Image (tube, rainbow, N blue to C red; front, side, top):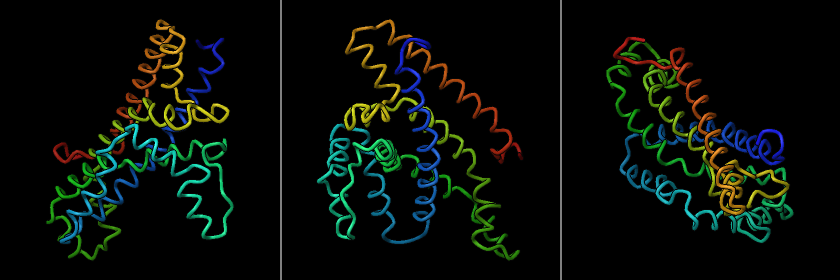
Length: 238
């Protein structure tokens, strides 16, 4: 597996790069949208529902195929860019852009993280904001000195969930690109599936699954280990 399978480390590196890029962007987008939706407005419930719809759809076949059509050579994205005089781009056939398209799909499904962040923002005591305003703190300073430390446990929770989910990614690669072009979108899960269910090497596929379990465990342990330096628990006063 480690020395003879030429696609093993390729698929692992693609999955690692996917997780490394998608997870931070998805968390930042989720938090940014949650901050916007935490404001008081009559239209906020409508916005919340609209932003959460992509997550309700999840990584379904219909969503993946729709995304594939959007980024096809004659898809909606190229038609929109053509209005600005840009030449059509083969988004899914270009090794430099194919993985980015799949990352974009993952980021677009930020609804669940956003709702969790939104609940955390609502639980920040208003008295803290009022005291900071009296002391002359502006919105930016209040966010970094009060809001962000208070929601770090939720950030930690979302980080764990999104990291595990990213390493288990499968649908977008299998349904949209099948690992092409030049294996630049060959997720580890897709390679595992091919070895186990296309070539019927069930033992090999099981070994690959155990290895990924070990990798996820290591990264989860690293995140837990680092949490003492940046996660604030109000009950513990640290």
